Length: 289
Image (cartoon, rainbow, N blue to C red; front, side):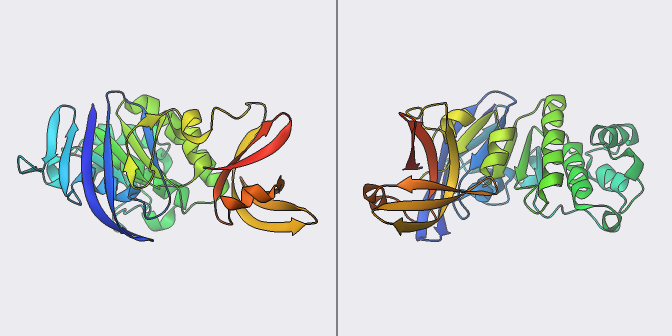
């Protein structure tokens, strides 16, 4: 069970704002926190881990209060059973992969460490050092080390953002496989729509600095008013006038597509907007999301 009801004043691209998160979940699902850069995604994970302090509210995991502003409860990170995987891996360079995992365990247990190596398919690299392995292997080692802490919740802060597309997709498969084996809640932060949609059981969307509900990925990303026959997400790269109409060029999953727009669409759409494109009476329509 995760119960989070916190607020914290943050500084974003448009100035100061109050980030707030209020949700609870009693499953071992993978929940993604999705939003633009600077919206508070990583800060939320850091508050759960005890690395940053909320201004107000409460955090409870498995029925234990980790933070309560009114009661003055604020467990130090070492007393919170959290596995945390950062973007930059944070492996100890002077330790082998096996030693990195052993070091993270509450009580060193070589048998359990070897099982984690097997689970993350790193057995043959047990004696290698971080400088000797690839980025994808380092990320798997970082996940294995986080699990070695025997956490009650696993926090993943954009763990695949620095990897190329092919490696990233392989690690997506690894995470989906691990999710079943671990049987603990996972909070996953990303601003990659494709990644979030593929990996998530539920999605917490940050809108105007707030997370207030957890949705199915299809509910989070797609407007139910659009036809299911044709619908995709994209980002507007340019808008050009051609005769009496307008053409929008969109980036969609690494591809460039163009969509016809009306003059009325320009009132609410501009370059840089994320949009959903769908079909209505067989004519594509475009809507800001």
